[in-house]
Length: 190
Image (tube, rainbow, N blue to C red; front, side, top):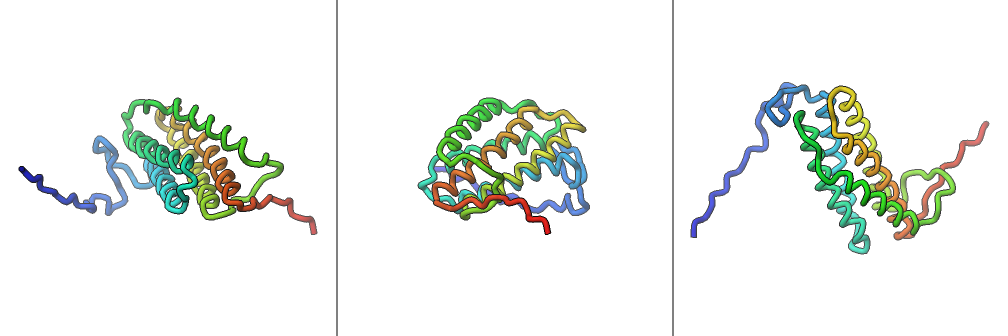
């Protein structure tokens, strides 16, 4: 039996020490480039979802299963955004349809919205609200990139619908865990 040697890949390359990074294909750009902001924020969103997964329990099987699929989607989206010559990502339209179906299912389970709600509730719900805001930031950066260069429009649609799904998941998780939603109250005039 032949044993394969494992080579450790160095994590650091020192090529980014002066504020530049390489895109797929080798092009060097500033780390503050809108493309880097876009795929970097997608990476942050993926990490935020990882945190949600670390605190949700197995009673939330539907939520957990979907979040894992989303993490894989986001990895693919981030890779596409890091590649200026990337083609369309397959199945994003299908995924948006799946999001809409799940949003409708979860919404039918929770009390109807009567007012704006404040982000919060239990740990899982609060972290889903946080992930939603990171998703909105990723969407803004990706829109900014799309004004400068061609971006697959399905990525923009996906991110927009994903933020709706994360909002709905936050409400659902709070409801399942019997965590009360805090309603926004218009401040009293003094």
